[in-house]
Length: 66
Image (cartoon, rainbow, N blue to C red; front, side, top):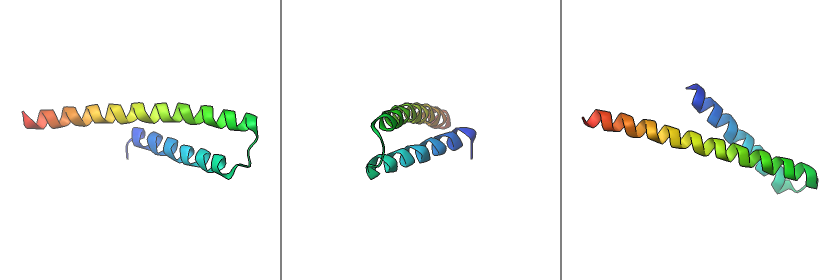
């Protein structure tokens, strides 16, 4: 597994953990704000990693067609 995959997988697990905390509802307002901010950062990071991976796959696919 590549370093990118590990980072993506870790980010996804952290997002799932944050979601579980928020769904429980036993979290203070300030903690909720911090968790949502952290989640938004993780979502942005994951999206960028997915875009990069798609570009790499598209490039590999294009090269194999040539």
